[in-house]
Length: 423
Ligand code: ADE
Picture 1 (cartoon, rainbow, N blue to C red):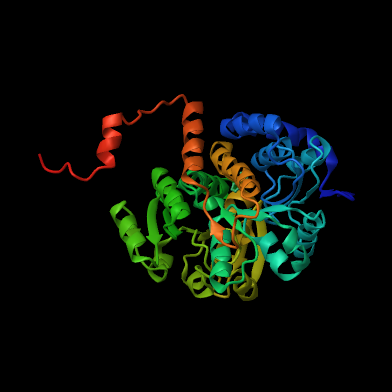
Picture 2 (picture 1 turned 90 degrees about the vertical axis):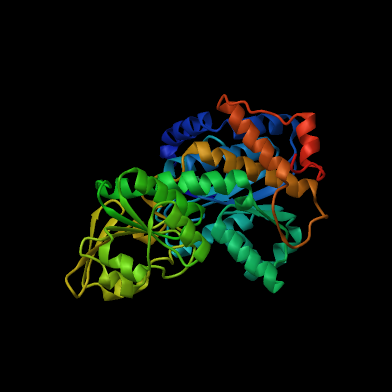
């Protein structure tokens, strides 16, 4: 373990491998590159101390480098104990001089010591993926709240947590819900989670999806993406939902829709993407077919009742990387991927850089937005202005070589008038 005052990473010798990974990701992130070039000239974040609790991946590294180019002093820790790419963490410290606290497989005590380590830098802006920094600031480190101008949040689960705080009147800083930008959730959650979840399942198991019965719990943007890609690979895909409108949408998108109680009898692979707790309960697991594979695509490791399974099992074996076999008292064997943590980052490398490009462009612009609106924001959850969404989408289209039409003057007038009806 390479440990210094300003970092805690697995091994600094891994830095050359990490640097190449960061460089490769950068090539797929033209929107963020564009923002970085502007930041390097304008320095909009000059003098700001920025603490980020995000998955430490090659894509995140590019965000951190962009924030630093904008003039911020940046420190980073991991937002999940299993998602860190150790080579990237090493390169951030060695090549980019960004204090980083993240080791893949860190235990809970180390995870929390890393959260505290970035808050020890006394940030003015924080960035979360899951709201752990904000939670810490509202519980154990309330003395620092007055130093924070604002925070931004990457993921659906974090936004749900923050909106609950706002509703209770407990939120004591302004937050930008980056997840709620269209150029985030419509792409990252759908195409990113869709592809990387399948990637994680395949890397952990190397099974054939064609012909398998694949059960997706949750038909939000992540669930929609996972179901779409499973179906595309030939799996017979079932959707489980609690929301009637989403369930109807899934049915009309061509999936079988049923309760988990029914799905457990027929499923080969189960993926939970709901953001909720014990969606795959012990009662469900006991009724599954022997050989069933279970994975979680939600932010926290609560979707599968892992502690219940740990207690119930009569035997546990690690079969291969990210694949554990649990033998139940009934002699059934059940397989869990990535210890029930988010499978796309535990067993694979997370979303591809092309979608993180837009998510992290929004994050960089959220930091600028917080600074530009210093003192004007209330302790609420904000969404970035629509013009930022449109700008990010336009830059992405441009990088893809796509040009789109513009409304004519006559069309603009038509859309803003109400007196032209049936001819
Ligand atoms: N969340 C999902 N995929 C990610 C990635 N590649 N980097 C950072 N956060 C992510």
